[in-house]
Length: 170
Ligand SMILES: [Zn+2]
Image (cartoon, rainbow, N blue to C red; front, side, top):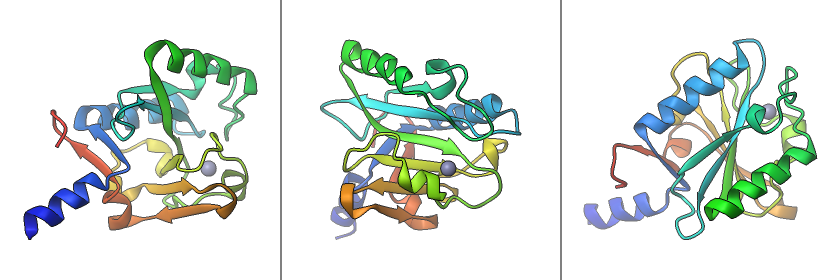
């Protein structure tokens, strides 16, 4: 019983990252935000394995002027992102951005402006501008459901949806 339950739970992960990848993501977000402004990134995965994050594209690499305190990502930068997806055979499965303080709830702007307005798209919010190490249970996991808005998970519920594991995939 335990095994079946455990494997069901692990199949239910929305996103999986290797431990080093996760640590690097948090460190990069913190570095790019310099402890005083929000930063963010897109998480990309192969078309065939959409939960397995294989590439991270930081907002400020795609649009060098976008970190303005909060984030103003310009539409033109999306064409760079789609080019990467097309040439690498990847899809954008999630975005991640930082908030100051401990709250990882969405702002009104976050709710109104999904970075990718496709049902199923995931938005992660990382606390404390990623200036310290962050575990999955500290992150807000928000899934866009189109006209139905967003479903959000926090704490243990959030951690249950983000798999951070050692290589190889569980
Ligand atoms: Zn936000």
